Amino acid sequence: MGCYNSTYVNAPISQVWQAMRNFHDLSWAPNVVEHVDVVGDAKPDQIGAKRVLNGAFHETLVAFDETNNSFSYRIDNGPGAVSKENVSGYIGTVKLFSVTDSNATFVLWTSSWEIGGEDVKAFCDPIYVALLTDLKASFS
Image 1 (cartoon, helix red, strand yellow):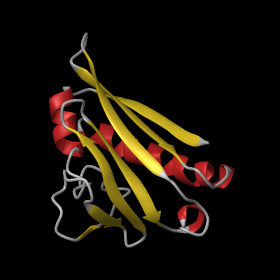
Image 2 (image 1 turned 90 degrees about the vertical axis):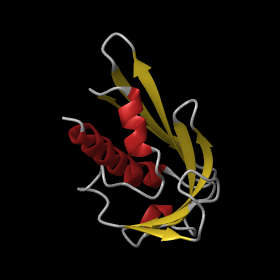
Image 3 (image 1 turned 45 degrees about the horizontal axis):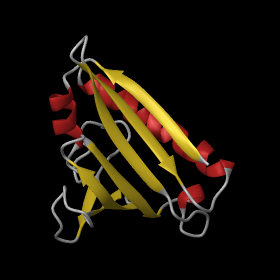
Image 4 (image 1 turned 135 degrees about the vertical axis):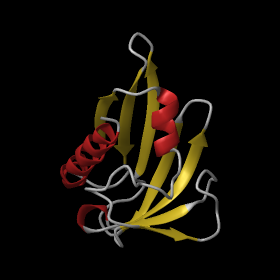
């Protein structure tokens, strides 16, 4: 079970990666993320970095690949379908790919989980769509 969401951003991969690579900064998504609380002292590109989005989504950075423009995070707790009582093993992954013929970027945002059902997908997919919509708009 998982989510698959993607978009095409009309900007070079270096610019899109620069906007997204900071785990503690989602300023590119103002219509989705009102505030990010940094938890602990880990740097935003360091495995183990923690954040709380909108006071509800507790997430930990579990992989960061500067060379391949990607990172993965775990949802430790959240509202509704992504609460620790309803889902476990939730991993989200963001990967950026260069679209060489137009100097643009393909952004792929996927997630998977070990325990949890369709309600997790139904809950998360609209959030990812909104995040990617904001990302795309930030480069318009």
